[in-house]
Image (cartoon, rainbow, N blue to C red; front, top):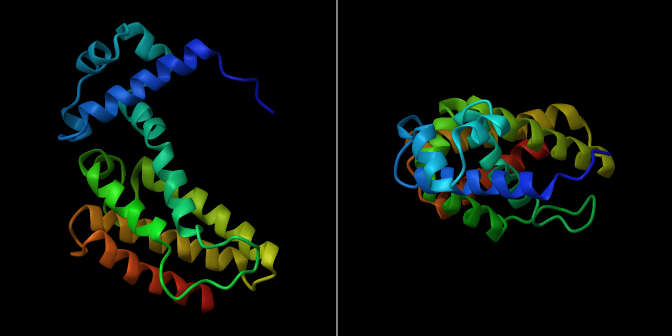
Length: 187
């Protein structure tokens, strides 16, 4: 168990994350500079580098919530282990996709086409682990294989959708993606 984070550190990191999201509201991460970011956050440049190696490290930290939200959205229907997935996607999935689209410029920088990049790697890893653990707990066959397939499909489709390769609105993508993931689970 790790020691609790110092409250001052937590506040500084929260200010830096909020400033980054505000700076990236309408432009990609590549157009954001450390100077503008620290000015908005009200901290010094040295403070920024005390907490983060670079803007990408801050961006991945700032986007950690989107990873948790994505994983939770896919599992929102599951209230007990081994429960049968509904035919329709959970509402949380379409809401998650709409939120991701809202922050598209930032997420496109971190989630590359095909699902790579720092955000894609983290999403894939966390989704694979959650799916594997839930399949194993339910006694479902091939937990490692199916979990890897689900994580790769979700991360890749999400990335390609953000980059415009999958023309669909959030609700339509949720429907089609859900059917794809259900098929992988039943394979």
